[in-house]
Each structure stands twice: as structure tokens, then as C-alpha cells.
Length: 221
Image (cartoon, rainbow, N blue to C red; front, side):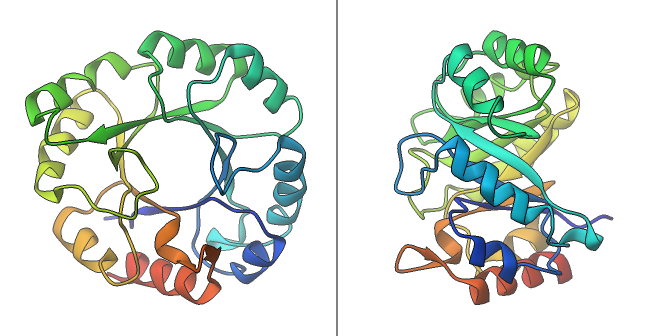
């Protein structure tokens, strides 16, 4: 069975990318929403140029993911005109219809992040997935609020995996991941992919040692 894909999100520095040379990282993420990890489209373009010179997954450059929260079509168009993103990740209240419009209008892959909360309930949460068939390729399950460094209840993952598979969607897991719990997630659930940001940081800065350890745990487990 193929290993889970890895996305390292919240890239801000060239040194982070250079330190990832040779690592099996398929995706890197740039945050355009309000955040301490936010970058401008122009800065993301500079970083992407570096990434494309750094061999990562099997010597290939990683694909670029842009993280947005409730963007307008005009805002997406302005960003995509400055940086050649491969994926638009929607992390707010965007509808399936909006997701489909983004995919078709800009010819990009679309990922939809959905929060897992106790209040949502497993049945209601699963019900959201069907609407994204054909509108997104990937559902990203995250802790409510995102970027909290906290995990959600992993025991709901199998139900989401089954529902996602019904609709041709990949399922990525985020929220509270780190080098110490990555192997537990992979062994127990084998998700299509994992997405990490704060879990590979030290004092708010990407830590190349933690990134290497995380990737090794995911790929070798």
C-alpha cells in the first residue's frame, strides 16, 4: 500500500525549503489568510521558485498549496496571477458550489478543509462530504479553528474514510500532528495524506530537524 502523502504548511523561509532537500514531501503550503504564517503572493512566488529547485519526493519539486479562508473569486484571481499554485485549499465557510467554481475557473485542484467538532456529530459531519463530489479532490479533516496544535477524536476517521471513498474523495488528516504521534496515526488509520504546521515548529519557526523526523515517521511506518 502506498505511503501517506505529506504536506508541510505555513512555509515562510527559504531555509526551510533548502533543509527539506531529499525529503519525501509531496506538498508545501502557503497561508494567504490572516495568520502569523501569512505570506503575500509575491513572497510565495519567491519561495516557490526555490522549492522548484529543491528535489524532494523522488527528486521532484513539491506541489504548491495556497490556504485561503472565505476568499472572493477576485482575490483568488489576483493571487493566482502572481503565484502558480497547484492547489487551492479552502478553510472557511465556502460552499460546494464555490469550490466547484474555483476548480473549473482556475483549473486548479481544490481541497476543502472541514472541522471535526463534538457539536457537529459524526452523522452531520459525514453528510457534508457527498456535496463535494466533483467540487474538490480532497477533504482535509482538522480540529475546529485550525492551527491549534490540538488533535480531534481520531476514532471518527474510519467513518470519514469510508464516506470519502464512496464519493471519490481523498482524506487528509491535520490538527495536532507531530513527530511523536505520526506513527500512531499512520499505523492505526493509514490516511491518504497528512498536513502539519505547528507540530514541526520550535518557538513559532519551522524546525528542519522536526520536519525530517515527521517525514521519516510517516514514510517508514
